[in-house]
Image (cartoon, rainbow, N blue to C red; front, side, top):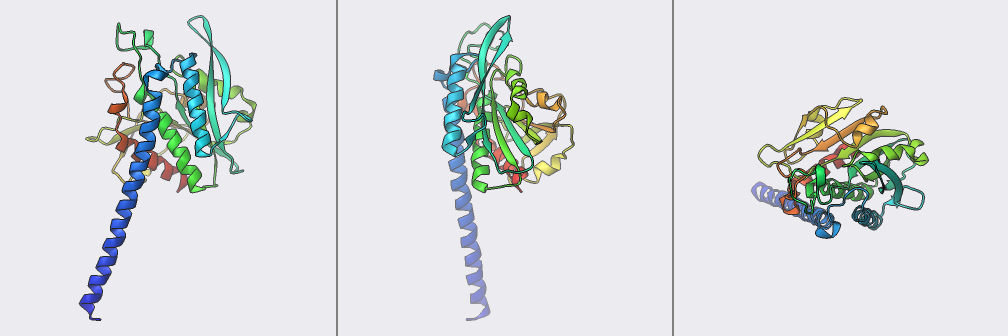
Length: 298
């Protein structure tokens, strides 16, 4: 066999391996996109009626998330239940809500928490920016995108069999009316016994702008260079550090925990009836989940 022929064979092998890798990546990407789309479509559908905090629609969304965690293979955090009920007061009225939480117990020394609130603003009311319109506010980006991403990350972590940390996947209720779900968690004895390494909040991460490819984030109680996050992205996502990003992580930061919030930012459909599922950038959403997965497990 002459040298030229050997080079041709080696080149062909390299090409075949490269093509196989591309096909595998494309198949994985398509699978993840379908996964995200399914959850966002359901949670932002008319049947969920905007998932207002304290409503029966919010409860239905909580039960759906519980079922999704179970199907992924994530065990309940609250003893034998994924749900933990609590009461909150808003506009001088008392309502009942619930947090949803699944747990991967690797018997590690510390736990990473990934949060995403699942409630929204129902038919709008005083929190709406679709002024004068009493209609269902789907909240596809706010925050079905964060919920779907949280579920996908849970699936990826349990499949990776990473044992360095325990993982708590938390879906908070009654966020829009005052971050009540995040605050309520501190009343749960099992939670207060956890040693927490990091809290990550996914809040509105479905509108990655393909022109700027920019994600905003903020850390509290520790520093994180944007370059560290960017290096885990295979798709040239850039991270920009912002300040004063209020969210569920704020409750944890005030207690001294290290927190990180990830968002693609406020847009023209924020708290409007036009925040719908077809406007989600699923490619960008998959890339965000993959980036955070690599950040946590590599």
